[in-house]
Image (tube, rainbow, N blue to C red; front, side):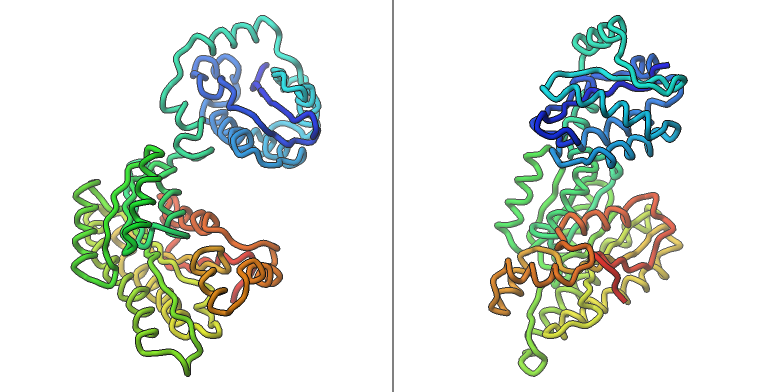
Length: 402
């Protein structure tokens, strides 16, 4: 009973799974339901499509995948096969060290890895070489719509404020990769144009408008345009933010008011404008970007207050909007490498590399955060399947926060 076909390429210089200089095997793109039915009688096409998707991440990312990690990943996807079986498959994979493709299958009844019989291999190759590629599958597996990304937000529209750079830019791209229509508003016209161009070059559907979240009319006009352009606003990410750090006795009225206006007034204007469209459709996801600074941080009385305020705002939204199918949650980043943290290092008069290392020394996981770490958390809250998660604050900081 042939359950799957694995077509690996393993580096000759690394026998434990460093996949490099590889291309996506054609059968990933060209596989059809009939081939999967022929070779996977005990598993659905969807099951194997997920396995292919996971394998594709390894191929396309060219990241080190240790033998045990990859084996356990396979086992977790199959569920009914032993580590010993996959260990045997792995050893067969090592035969590919010279870059040659070895087709390997496994027999669940015998719990043994085997080479695919030549007759079946030839039939498969013939099918793959001569069948047209399904364009949607090709785009999905080739990475044109994001490496290994499923389209969890297909048909949804996500609006990200301050989405032209840093965390906001990564969040916008994450939604686009997963099939969403993306709208970005920002006051930085140059960065906004660059972000829009880069996303559209990848084939994503993007709306971009220069607007300040502190100006009610600009926000309301932009939100109405997004709804008119895409037909809905399903996800709102209040990401726009600024810093005006200083010790309290040096902080000016303008420093305080600017930070309050962008974070709190901005989130208020955008949420009030967007929620009516969400309520009409009985569906919505609101994610506010808070910060670990909400717990208090020296030199950031204004920023800490604003970010703490966003957490209270989030919880209140969850209470008021829940009955309309709208959830509200907050993501509170820890130390993330962005232009904003670079500005903090500059204000402190220290090299950014040294600033990063000093912060990493205090992070339990031993690394700094990246914008994609925050995008991952936002994607979780924005997912349709997260409908029972609301009013929560998730600290994404590489360790526990009080």
